[in-house]
Image (tube, rainbow, N blue to C red; front, top):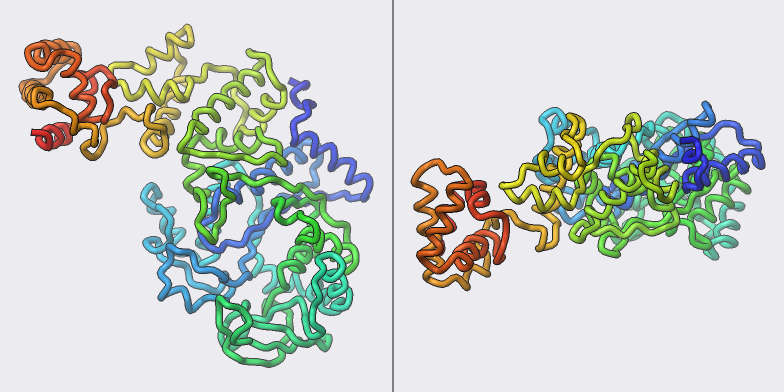
Length: 548
């Protein structure tokens, strides 16, 4: 397997580039970091960064012992947009307040589906200390599911503990240099009384509405301006305060590299929107060099993950949430999605298409390449290896997901027997466990996302196609219901009885079509007797009564 370790997978290519960068910069300790503002439900797009950094950190850990892997929640940021799912009357008063100082929403109003959550997990959310912590928990749970093990750091704790004090002072003392960097890098002319720090107003508690107007080496002067921003109103208070110990925060473009300085971060990438010319990464690099006097961390500019071609946004509610996304497939396959795509390649993923079956197919192919039971791109095999959360499994049979999705909807098919025939030998207990696990995810896909041709489950409502049924077909359905209520049938016996009933009425073809039209809205489906017996008896009765 050593050839796989040295294949040109993007993680291995990055590790080689990092090794060269370390020699060039004489960097000894590696600290991989990523950051997110927990402003509400976190979208799937944010998973790309967290999985990418975790993959890189764990790859680096195989060649060096001095590696730190962290994830920062930037919870000192203000609430600057109200998510649509939150009650406005309760949360609008907190616009402009740091996210760490806003009360957590209740589970009912949070916009998160907790229907499949245990009582213990719900209690954790109910006891969240803040709005930021509540939504951070949601994201942490999602990326922990994908095997990401970063140490969590809360930005407000860094500020309040004094660990940011030295960089705050450096920034305020270097205001001339920072103004010059803004002009040269971002072509942005700043006013003379501008400083890269925002005080948390001691009167109204808002940080998004304050403007720092002076710095005397010990204290800053500031104003809480009524009309500073359109999304929050300041209270008009002004005064002086020490900028240290959590009384405020640095503005984003200075705050980002300041975190690098305070923590000793040496590796941190970001989405391509941050790496455009004159953007926040260029600003951060210049600040590292000219203000903070550190080497700018190794950059990994990565592409977005898109849902139906649209970039996902937490504030706009576009795309699937991270919680929902990691429930679409087993954790290793979710991790494989990110491991298998180069970091500078867009991931365009649509659960309502065949993206999920295609992902399972690609994972299975990667497994066979890794196990050397199939020839193929070694990078794909390496992606399978990187996707494993526990130990890498030995070669075994993998049942094809799209076959499961169809065959499981045919009650007459014994899946274990069917896949044993495909495998060419009886499935082992561990292979049966894989099959059973995939059935669970196939059911989710069929019920929520699958194209019409894959949906063979009875419709909850009467299909519109049932309007085409003739009176003879409806009479046949009533007769079929009477048959079903006569006794406990064996499927094969019922199939014959239905055949005889149809022959005496609309004919076999029209009779069996009536069953599928009434329950599926299709003209064909699973074997009729097995299908009818699998349907809840109350649904059978109510559906046929609707037609009578």
